[in-house]
Image 1 (spheres, helix red, strand yellow):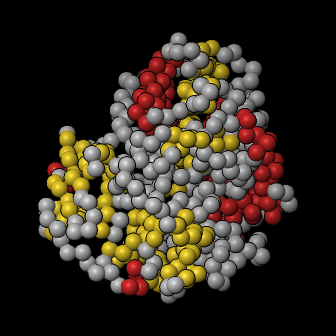
Image 2: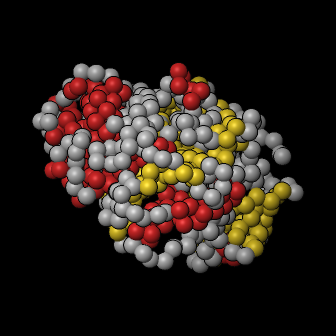
Image 3: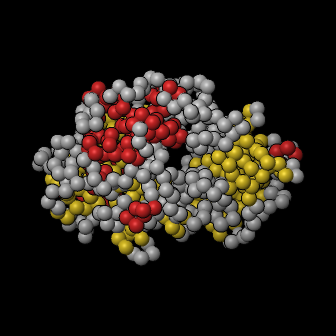
Length: 578
């Protein structure tokens, strides 16, 4: 299905990192698997020949492109011994049918966080900042929480700050807040890295993009990298795309351009540029910090805090890098998302291989992580003389466990109902002469149905049997009408759709399910959660770092919803049948 959220990075390359063969001077050879699909920049010194993997990787990438309707893709492959190759697939401009070119920049989003973290660790290695010091020591002018937040906690997403908010949040006291004691838990936070970018600027005495260039990019010898996403470079980027509406079968449209220079996602890159960066990360994973910082700093950079375990996923967060298990090997991984772009990188330091992938589309429920991981497996198996791994077949519609439990007709007294149809373990929603595919999002379900795709389905069980389903504040009975629970007037007034002009703020739908107030984040990143009153705020049950505040009452109805320090405004959509 297609539906997604945020990231950046772009670079060009002239020479390899310290000790690596120069990519710019390498003889280029093109694999026979397709016209310029994979081009070898340098064979390296190891003697390994990876051409046998190209056909497998390209075939898998093309399956993903076809299955999800992706416009274009760029990727790079590297090893520790100087090998580098670049792959190009599809269109940089769908309307003009312009193919992806090696010079095209792609926004890599949150992969940029590792660059920000490198800056901070370099400053710490030089004795200019203390990773165990509170941020307030260096940035006393920021409206920080009263409890101290250490730099190390910001780097590892254990600060307790919300996922994203303004540098100066629009809240009554104007201050940031924490959802848990800093250092106690893990919760991903974009604003943490924005604050770290401000820290780097303060200590270096230069704007963050310029400081990044001097602290990291120049020492690595990466040329062509843009340390900020800005309009002057727009023509050099592949055009970014996103679905025009919330349905999975929606056509893609060009996204609006966004200038961006914050530490959470400020970089744009070519695949060649990322090749140099990945080889440096291989070295860092092997304990070598040069030419950015010391070997001791490299170890600190790649070591997660104890509290940075990621919700039982078998992963942990170091500094701008996820530390994952890749087939029994410790590897680094990160994804990135920006309007119109999705990216992923995977680095296996032990095997000495890495891959970066970026696509000029942002779709819900999809990212290129499977491709970057599969590429590392392919390269690793060549280096270690093992049999080739087989990838998982890409599918936009995964089977749903116990799908038959949900099959049937659902009706209500006030709204037209729907049917849940199951075929081969896959669920479909049928209504109004249309059928929509269903995917699972946590404990909820979404259909790409014209009328029923804007809200999530929440099926209710009694014992082991599914008896009803909530959808958009309406309770539908399975097989027969069930009483609609009354909604308290104070909750009814809060219901509505709230929107923002900020391209990073997706619409929010607030509905009451009887005495339960819930919110749904709509658009590319879908989620649903129960809101609980907490003083003058409402807090999501499963996201304690976020908070909601309803404000600007007009005739007893709030016109503004403040979502973690950013304003969204009441919107009155007109529902129409397809």
